[in-house]
Length: 383
Ligand SMILES: [Zn+2]
Image (tube, rainbow, N blue to C red; front, side, top):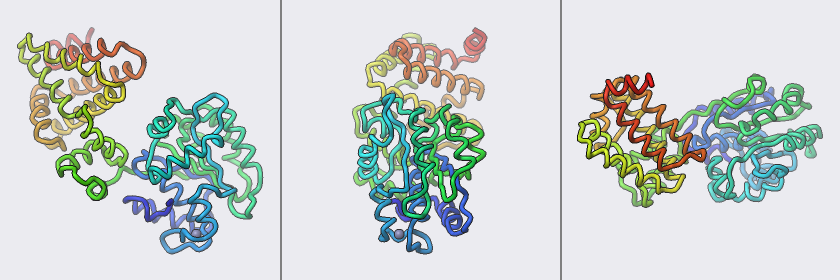
């Protein structure tokens, strides 16, 4: 585990990390920035392991030396982990057994959603008390005479607390390494960003992802695999979730198609058919919240494809959805699609909060219906 060879794709980043590890003037703070499903956490860990390895091979750690073994077990005394925790006073250290288990179970492919699910919790954060631990740990010198490393997983969950570690990021002790891992830089302070050497991890290429899924998804049809590749947009975890979802009682595509068909009837002024859209909205309201959110994510994906059709006349949708998309591409301008996408976002947000789900989905159906008609649309946006 935690070798470069375990990581799917990302060859350019791997090479650049290997070169940096050999350069002899290693920057003291690194930020690995990208969705966990792109391999971001694995890359950060493989980098750390390579730096510590006592018998570095040309392109990977040896996996055999004392340091490699300790890092695989996540037991190296000079490597500290900070991870988002759930309770106010809880510290990462108490959650490390869970974190190790999750890494083992998933071969280090997991994200914050998995971390929440694994602990049956939500809203994990890195809190102020945790930063005190970082300051304390990183103030000590290393035990084994090499680097002392602080790894912060999901660094964006530091939010304002990151102020506390600014100084140590700016003036660290010698032979100190900070490895921040984050999915998005939006919640990271610019002052943090400016101190880090940023490794931007890009989505996996479609072919790479497809090749990986083919080996890992026996019994899935080729079409289903292709769809999961398209829908997940380079994110292995999303692709796997999509494939798992196809087996569930809540197939996304069928549900979206029903919803869209209701809207098409609505637009064609068969008003009794608005019932179709409303019935579908009510069916969605009876789903679990994760399914509802998944549905709205899929809806957004569909709308992005719609924009693609408008601009390039091509898209990645399969035949069924493509027919529906073509219909909407013909009757909608891009400003209408944009407002539609904002609507879906609005209800995504509402459902994540505690809005009345049934009202939310019915409103989404009715407002989506209004957008289809240019005249109604003008009224809608000026209201
Ligand atoms: Zn080694």
